[in-house]
Image 1 (spheres, rainbow, N blue to C red):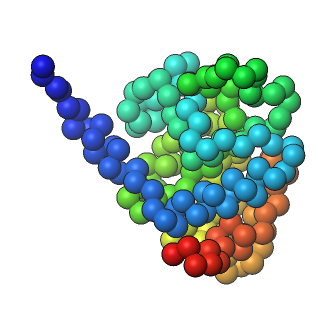
Image 2 (image 1 turned 135 degrees about the vertical axis):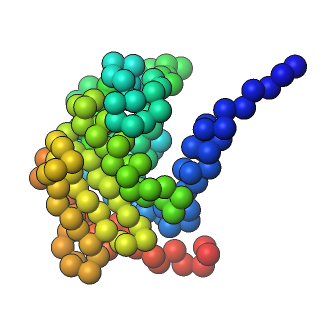
Length: 178
């Protein structure tokens, strides 16, 4: 039996290795946004992109894209009856959040954000844990606001009507866990 390995796929998997800080920030955002009853929050949800060609954004042409977080204004329930599930979701989120890991490039995530907007996402966040900074994009890459922990201002996403204390996103008080 011959096994053919796609070297590009192996490298892509290695590039997306999250870190402890990445995981903590992703968890903090999930808890903060998940506690807001207006939203349905999903981690690592596979979005069906068969309607567009991802290669136009410099992404490997495939039928899916996976944000770190997908946030939906909850209108109809996104989860149906027990036993029903979707591997690739066709309903596009209102907000996607990408958390930069130490092994990713910002350019790589900006390409994904362009693709999200082409799919109909309204707002995208690029979270940079190492800098304790969040860039909130509205409808396009050229329209954004930047928030960092040193400014002390809450993260303000006007499109989604979200106002989060940035200190809670980057909180480091994990007790004796580490």
